[in-house]
Length: 144
Image 1 (cartoon, rainbow, N blue to C red):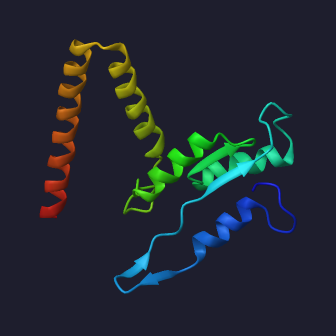
Image 2 (cartoon, rainbow, N blue to C red; image 1 turned 90 degrees about the vertical axis):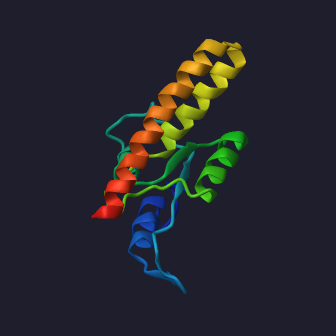
């Protein structure tokens, strides 16, 4: 939660990023975080809490959710996190892969709901090209 006594959610996130966690296979990445808050962005943008919310996003919090929580959105977010949607690259640079993944899922749902077979074929062709690009990228990484 963003607004807690003593240590807020942003402080907790920063502390957790510094913890070293290990398994038998080696060191684990820092845990992903969902920051939940009753705060509303419509408030004065100079407000301390709003600034903390902006800082949380800059620091790499996986998702910010506003109360009351949408249970379906929370479930989908947790499912994506559990499936290992990566939040960071090996370079350590923070990447938001959840947002484009969700947009992709939304586009597929929209095409299916529309019943437009031509759009589905075009979308599959585009996806196949992008998958091929990623496969070529991974092959290059293997040779390095």
